[in-house]
Structures are given as C-alpha cells and as structure tokens.
Length: 308
Ligand SMILES: Nc1nc2c(ncn2[C@@H]2O[C@H](COP(=O)(O)OP(=O)(O)OP(=O)(O)O)[C@@H](O)[C@H]2O)c(=O)[nH]1
Ligand SMILES: [Mg+2]
Image 1 (spheres, helix red, strand yellow):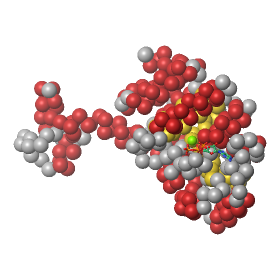
Image 2: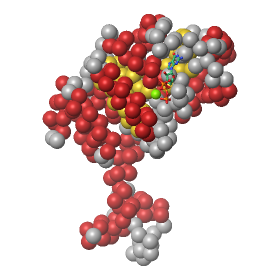
Image 3: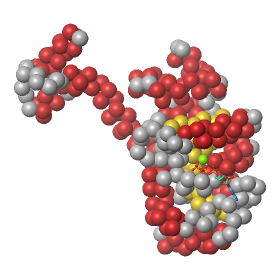
Image 4: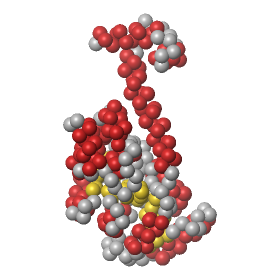
C-alpha cells in the first residue's frame, strides 16, 4: 500500500489503516518506520496511561473498566504488550480476542504487541505505535505492560501517568518488587479489594510511600470485577498533568539515531570478511574509514559488495 494513502487512513482514524501501519512498524526495517512516522509524528497528542504490575494482578480486567470510563472524556485506544513466551501464547491470545471484541463494540481500538526479545516491560516499537494511535486522534492511550517489576521502569519514559497495580495476598512478591516500583508509580491501585487482606495491603503501600517521601501519591483500592471505586481512579488519572512531550522524546531519539546509523553502515560492516588480507588495518582505523574519515578500505569493501 502507498504510504500516503495509509497515512490519510491513520489521520481519519480508520481501524484498518491503523492496524496495517502497526504491522508494518513491527515487521519492517527502520526505513519503512521512518516513512510512516515522519509523516505523522506531529499529529495528535494523547495522555498515555501506563498500567503495570505483577502477572495476574488484574491489569487487563482493570482496563476493561477503565477504557469505557475514560471514553466518556475522549477517544480511547488500548495497547497491550504481551510477553514473548511461547508457553503462554495461546491463552493470552484468547483473552485478547475477547477483550478486543468487547472494547471495539464501544468504539475503543485495542491492539496487542509482543515484547519479543526486547529487554524490559515495553516492546521495541511501543513509541512508534503510540505515535500512530495519537495521530489517529485518540485522547487517551492505555498501555498495559508485561508485569515484570523492575523492568517496567521503562514505562516511566513513555507514560504521562503510571498506575502500579497490586493485590492483597501477594506477600513476598510485593516485598520483592516494591523497591523498584515505588519510584515509578504516580498512582497505586490495590485491586481485588473483595479479597481478604486488602486493608493491610493499602496500609503497607501507604507506609512505603511515606518512607520514600511520596506522601501525596494516591493509593486507591478497587474491585475490577464490579467496577467499585473506578470513579475515584479515573478522577485521579485525569487530574495528573501530562509530562513535557520533549522530555519523553529524548530516549527514543537516541535509540532511533543509533539504529539508523547501524542500518546505514551495517552493509559495510557485514562486508568485512575473515581472512581478508586486503583489509590489514586495525579495527579502529577501519571503523573510521567506514564512517567516512578515510575512504581507502571503504572503496574496497564497496566494490566487493557490488560483485555479489
Ligand atoms: N476477586 C477478584 N478477582 C479479580 C479482580 N480483578 C481481576 N480479577 C481476576 O484475576 C485474574 C487475572 O486477571 P487479569 O486481568 O488477566 O490479570 P493481568 O494482570 O492482566 O494478568 P497478566 O496480563 O497475565 O499479567 C482473572 O481471573 C480475573 O478475573 C478483582 O477485583 N477481584
Ligand atoms: Mg493482562
């Protein structure tokens, strides 16, 4: 498909164009991503709401409540990042399809993306996909990340509001992950307050926040099965101001520039071969030559590549 037509589709909020662009972003090289992103990245601006927490805490169930509640205030999209594990693949997919159907009947676009081998709670292309969803006119983008404790700190770089979900009875698990997540949460949500121990869990988090000088951070108990206290949660999410978009942009900028440089020069690097006596330079000199500071060996590599 022609990129210009695709971009027009994204800007109209057309689901098929959005889905197609996200697939292209996930499966093509940086040049295709550039082609799409460079045309859309100035369009739209959404509040990015990160939902993180340990596996099974109820993040997806929460989003099934949260997304329709936010949809009263603007256009909503959901992006779920799934672990790449081959074991959980089928089960997760089934849940996703049900959730997608339920949300889309309410005009909410949902998409999941795998974090593949990317080391962290996000996928490599989360930022790019968010740009597509912003350009499509969404006011709120809810991001469910793989609940992996410390690794989810990545979410801070991309979300305007980070909601850390915990549940009563996690016990040791809470202790283990607390050190990392106390820093990242703008809102702490104790889910499953229908369960025993929810009062203690809320108290425990409040105490930890006090110790980290985050006395003002809201701690909200909810029941995601009944929707209890979601008004309170939504109110708190709406109250938190968006971060400066430029600040969020910097990390991505560095990553993409590195990737683009690598893409541009990797052919030359691949062209270096074992036992190549015509390239008898030390690696540093050779690197400088590839970067264009001296073109002697580069010409050799280039001309050999053309023979292939
Ligand atoms: N009792 C109770 N159960 C809940 C509540 N919220 C979610 N659950 C249940 O908890 C289980 C896990 O919920 P999910 O929403 O899949 O949890 P998740 O955090 O998205 O899980 P992963 O994506 O696998 O990390 C499901 O069986 C839900 O029905 C709640 O408020 N109370
Ligand atoms: Mg989930």
